[in-house]
Figure (cartoon, rainbow, N blue to C red):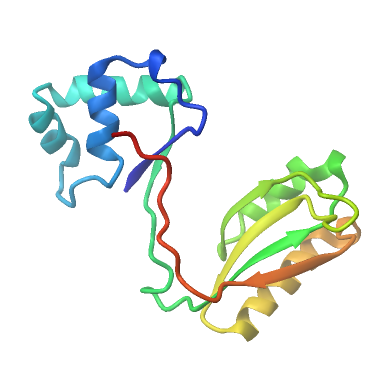
Length: 169
């Protein structure tokens, strides 16, 4: 699990210990039963202090979230596609929440259109074991969106790229 650091992180908003915490966690938490105890010991602080600081950084938007980052390919999900949707702007939040809640969607977000060539404003990453299954998932999303789906496409992954977020040094 790794904390996802906000892109707009301003280092002036954190102290040296916060920075050390971010650096210690940005590549993942130790795979032990009490990872925060291990990290706190390495940082020379109590687990309570570590948790308090991480909670504050989450509340302040410095750390966006802490969560598992699965390797979909290692889990057998070989047909991964970014679905792109043209939906009404005034419905994007509610529609995005519905699409993002689907079990086969790992992330869903709003992006600006680039007219006239790119009318899509809702993006959702779909994971499946086969291309056929992925296309079935796309059809499920289209059904969920109903008349709000004014057009869509799916861009399938062709190779694995190393996925990392912002890293502090």
